[in-house]
Length: 63
Image (cartoon, rainbow, N blue to C red; front, side, top):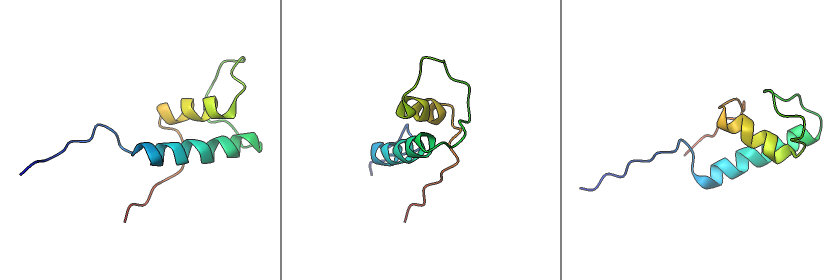
């Protein structure tokens, strides 16, 4: 029996979907949940920063 250990909480597809959805929210004016450098203007970069800090209030339901 082979058991595979995953090091990530989400697959790369789930991560991309979460970051994309959060970046869209930020681009439409949603409040940013973390401090970020003033020169960071891209919503995707800000969403990735929030994802890395585990601050995004989006959950994934796996069937």
